[in-house]
Image 1 (cartoon, rainbow over the protein chains, first blue to last red):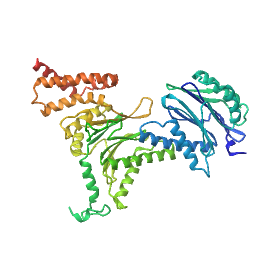
Image 2 (image 1 turned 135 degrees about the horizontal axis):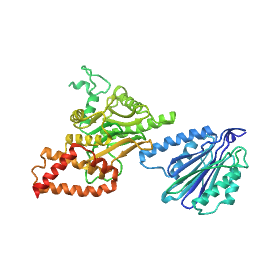
Image 3 (image 1 turned 120 degrees about the vertical axis):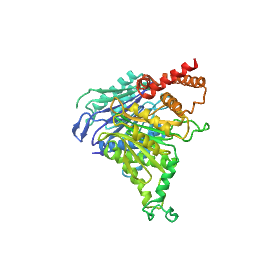
Length: 204
Length: 308
């Protein structure tokens, strides 16, 4: 079994009109056994920047802690928050540092950049960035997620419609993946507020 | 003073002194002063800015107050370039602790860690000591609010009230007289301003020359570090300053009319500034119940009567 499928995960980020949504599943497993149904895969870096980490949970936690370290120092020195594009470059550099002994994670970065323009990107475990204008996916359910997002995505969705789209895409995709699921966790971020919602799906 | 034992930091003099460390402290004695006060519900740090040329590019960054981590801040006195290095070191040390233990670094440990770095420069390496003194203000869940003072030798200790920089002896003795154990944050601000204005070299205290920072707990329970905006500072300072000026008779030579005019001008300017500050500040100052406030009001009334 691949190391990336050890814990199971599903992550998706989608762009809307001056907003973005980032969603994950809630299962944490050890191969076929489920050990937690409330696992947080998405973390806030600052009010306008969220990071989701799929893959091996221990690497995701360590990578997140290292990124908080770097971001905190950046904030203290620059006296401002990091832009999403800059943060994505930082993540990419940190992952490439471990080119020959990598972190087994696939990050999804979503944030609001200058002039509240939404920014999303994903990268592989050694830092190859993939910028997209519409949506990015990661995790064991990524193939189903690609299909679901491609068919459900529309340009310039308002936050409420975006939430519905992301939730439907996530829930239908994790249903087809035994290693992810047990509900969903969705963040919809606009320039003024962050709405965090828990989805109830098939609890298996 | 024996010149033969001056040049190396790493040797003692026959009297058992480390001259380079003492010379570093001399350098700090010429720098802008900073005062720290521990109160029941927060720590107050106030600093005197030495560099106040009109030509200076205004920026939001501070000259004397620096944030080390979310729960610790410091005031600096001495050589700024040395201070920048140490502040960066302290920031990295705090983050390294958080990375390892996933919780904020206890304040004393942070101070100790930085002082260990400073001590290294007094014992080995052949490099000169850092010419900076710090006042660290912070909060942690073990000991609550704390104030620490550290100097170039690497010594540190916890204080209820401390002063560094120029005229720190005078400030320290004034603090010893006026400090009470259970002062509130607002009273601490007033006391700090009073002490600083009395010990500062320049005769008039303006908000451009001061920096005020407070470390306190927000209602949500998280630690907040706030640097006072120049507008709110102007109002808070106004009354103590006029009172002090009157007492010192530095404005006694001014005709009463000019004095009143100046007073009224400041009041009007600051009332406008206050609008942006918000109700909280007005209440604290207006209901401060400080002797300064009452006496100044009495003086102002006398001035008005005499002019009229």
